[in-house]
Each structure stands twice: as structure tokens, then as C-alpha cells.
Amino acid sequence: MLKILSWNIQQGGGTRTSKIISAIDKEKPEIFVLSEYRNNGHGQLLRNNFLKLGYTHQLSSHTKKETNCVLICSKLPFNGFHFPTSDPTYAHGVLKAEFNAFSVYGVYLPHKKKHVLFNFLLKELEDAHKPYILVGDYNSGINGVDQAGSSFMYSDFFPKAHKLGYIDAFRARHGDVKEYSWYSHQGNGYRYDHSYIHKDLEPILSDCYYLHSYREEKYADHSPMVVELG
Image (cartoon, rainbow, N blue to C red; front, side, top):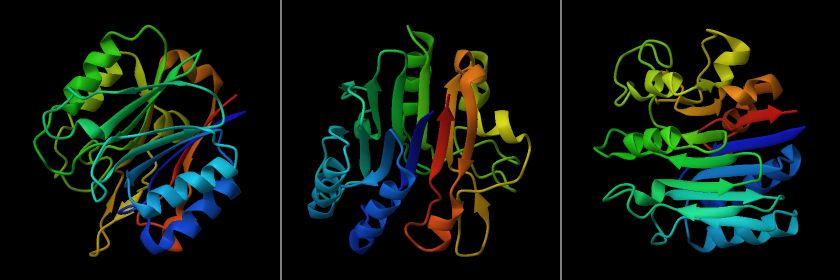
């Protein structure tokens, strides 16, 4: 079984850093992606502890210390890729870890801001030479499905990805269930966090689910998401 976890750790983790480390240690994914990671002191503490846990292969965005970005960690070796021309402002929002059988894209896409990262990702999917897995905080979804309202920007990305052979791993296993990964102060739920996989990987998709207890216990304001392949 291969376990891939993705998690928005909320503004770099801060005083919750030890909790985040303990959660990763408990869940023991082979690969994980952290969004809202920051290249600061807390970020270095996270990475040092992940090394001790066996995550010897790491890739982070190149940003200033208070900028939210992406970190990919793995117990398996990979080739890492940055995309400095993917977007004029938010190029740090996408990383790729290329493994032998597939590639994992870790994403942290801007919330309600103009960017071209969804177009960049679609072009990557069109040109793919192996199955891709895209996980992280998209800050979007399908209106009326992944939220009750219609405030999502870039909702057109999802049907376009479907046409390119990519499926929502969570929906593939749980259908139309209403489940959200983040809640506003007003109690409105949003499914910002997604895992999209190529249809060729669906036969080995064991499950895809959220770990809501970590959000409920305030490890971070998003629920981690897990994809299991095997």
C-alpha cells in the first residue's frame, strides 16, 4: 500500500509545529505534500524532524520566509521540479516530484486571486508521459457540489481535467457525499483540498479520505487528505 497525504498546515505551522510532526509520524505516509509551508525557522524545524522520520527526499518552493508555499517529502527517491515561469506572481504554488511509475504535483493555488496556474496544470496534463497525481489545496472546487454556494473561481478547471482522463479520487470512492475540508467562521463548509489521479491509476485506488480529527483538534484549519494506492 502506498499512502500519499496532503495537508494545508495553516501559515507555516507556527506554535503547532510539534503537533504537525506528530501527525505525520502517526499517519506514516510514504509521500506527503504540505501547503502553506514557509521557509522560516518553523519550516526548518519541520524538515529536520521529517529527516529523522525517514523522509530523506525533500523539495520546497523558493520563497521569502513569510510566503506560503509548498513542501514535498518522501521516503522514496524522486526527481524534483520547480516551475518559475508557470505564473508571473505565484510560480511557487506548484512543485513536481517525479517517481518511476508516476509523478506527484503538490499544489497551493491562490485564493480568489488572478493567476494562470490552472491553465499551466492543464497544459502539464495534456503533455503527460506517465500518470500524474495532483494533490493539495486548490482553493477552488465545483460550485454547488464542493460548497453550498457559487463563490469558487476557476471551477471550469475540474471538468477540463476530467476530459483529459483525470478523476477526483475522493468522488471515485465516495460518490456525491457532502464532506468539506475547511470551514469559515460562519460555519460554511468548503472542499478546497483535492486529489486528482489519472484514470489508469483507478484500478489500484484503494481509498481517498479526509482526516477531520486533526482539524477538529486544531492541528491546522484544514483536514489532511489521504490517497491510498495498492
